[in-house]
Amino acid sequence: MDEIPVTLTVNGRRRVVLIEPRKTLADTLREDCELTGTHLGCEHGVCGACTVLLDGEAVRSCLMFAVQAVGSEVTTIEGLSPADGSLSPIQEAFRQCHGLQCGFCTPGFIVSVTAFLRDHPNPSDHEIREGLSGNLCRCTGYQGIIAAVKMAAEGGAGVGVAASGGAGGAGGAG
Ligand code: FES
Ligand code: FES
Image (cartoon, rainbow, N blue to C red):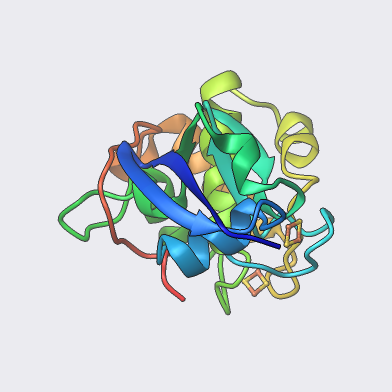
């Protein structure tokens, strides 16, 4: 299949990539945009590791072709971290609450939590569990993750839900 130029807007930056039309958004972000914070676990829509924001909504980038994102704003985990390399408030809450162990699932969780808390600023425990049911973690048992979402929602220990644009930050590597 021939490669075609595709223009994407990722983390506020316009990027033109030369890809086959059948290439997924996840692979395009990782291989062509060098944004490897978006992880690939199951590659068929189950685990949530590949979650990114598309016009603010959490989507699974393994289930989309990159060409479907043309004209939309894509935000990856790198775009949710402060440019100075510090942690975003939600990342900080995950750190403080031990919401990660190996960290493989963490970028997907951080992206999902960002959209979730924007829509549910004062979530109940049930809403948190429901809201994160599309993200799987093999390590933590979820309790630390749920505590981190609560901390971020409550703005505990200086943590709020505001996210800033930029590159880098924990939960965005690999
Ligand atoms: S890698 Fe996309 S949902 Fe698992
Ligand atoms: S921290 Fe290892 S999979 Fe979630």
